[in-house]
Image (cartoon, rainbow, N blue to C red; front, top):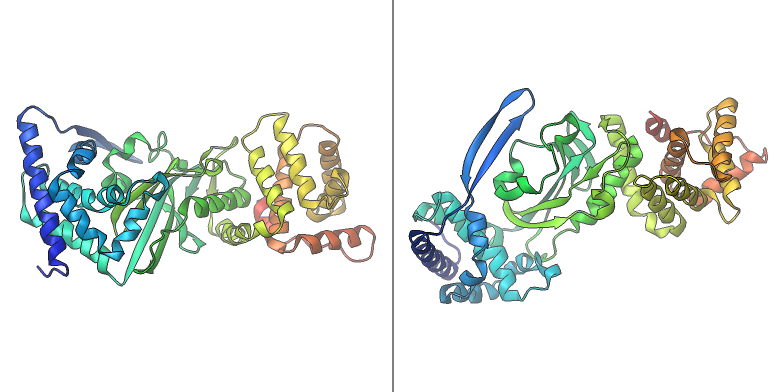
Length: 417
């Protein structure tokens, strides 16, 4: 086997051999490796069940002790001299672990776990260690790395894969794809994930970057924007998470929580994502990312999204605040309601109906379903237009009879569908 760093191979091998020996002795004294009773479910098929040794949990429970072994300290010291290992240490940067512990948890311990899983326990096989070490070298010394973050998606059914741009996509989850890397994942996956049609998909961020980069993508923030775009495009009760499963070069990298606003399930019903609304979500995600440049627009987005989780009277209060931030322009809620009705109404009767509903909201009455949806569609239209100030100016000129009403875009028609 071609080895690029013989000193790392030697120190990692000594650590793994020593750990196997110690753990085998512990098992002979009565310690037990736990087993998982896993259900493999697929729609329309009978469930299959499997007993699986949880060597990962067994080893992680002993990680602090294993890290203190002289062989572990020697391997960690060798890793310190490899700049390429820095990105793995950053996986635990938020926990403020010492470099020594971070390197052990993200590099050394995973090699031990992969070796033990390849052996089916602690009966040593050279081939299992060699495979684990080759994967590590490929990740450390390759010309580029591939990061993948995957989170369960709730409230959305999908047929074909939907591209949301910048390496983000919505797709069906492959059977057991998460538990293959994280055997304990069944305990933290959402209830009935993999069973119901609206709980079969995942949202995924995949990105390649150069070996010199030592920071992984901010996947929780990027996926939160994508979830917001999906909610705007479909009006569905969509959520992701509650956690994000991360891999780096096909190796487990970390488990991080999804941002609360994306992980919380809204009130409402599940929906289906087709290619047309998927394209709208793609475009909205890009525009949401730049909304921070417009403080009022960002506030409107936050208020509207918070309304999805609120009950009355707080739901209507949030919708009022969203509408006034979006189209009020310091002239009050009544004017914002008038502009929104002008923007969304296709004909005179539709505009009149919207004016009645939005004026009622402005007057303090609770928002019904269609009124709340009008605020969502107004957000979509303003985001797709790209310049909120010019949109307000055009609406005012239309109300004064100085120009035709801005035509309703295909984006709003898709959102209304």
